[in-house]
Image (tube, rainbow, N blue to C red; front, side, top):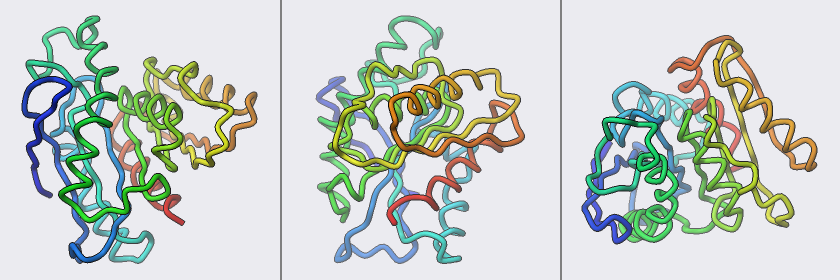
Length: 230
């Protein structure tokens, strides 16, 4: 796992992300890529500290359940100062989560695709996240089907905004949603599922035993990775 620093024109400051590289990474080969987003109280460190992503992805690759893939773990809150605000639910903090879309497209993706050997096309680019990051992944991924072919949300939060989904896009996407059956935010996943059904948008919706916690989110990442880039 590599910690990278990049300058964000969106925020005017340096920002950080972690990059997972597969064990056999070589710059002469092209790789698919997934952007993995954290929850409301986290930063780029959250998945690394609590989600065991390297172990999960290494095991999937070693078992030949997925092809080698690059994962990027950014700070999904684009603001200056670039840290967790005292009030995570404040309008300023919420605006910073929305502003991340600008940082992602204008700063982070160009930085990553210049430095690492990725395909750089939508068919090999995905986005996923947990809780607040799950809502972001849905909003950004389904709002920009020309950029992402693969979208995953694990326990998506109330920031999920179906009005941002481009329901009439001709671009095909795999949409994958997982939530714990005792999650206090389960209704968000249910409403999103119903919206997608009503608009005849193909997707996979699953629930599992669990709450709004890491066992669900780890399984979300593990399962989502096995559905994509096929």
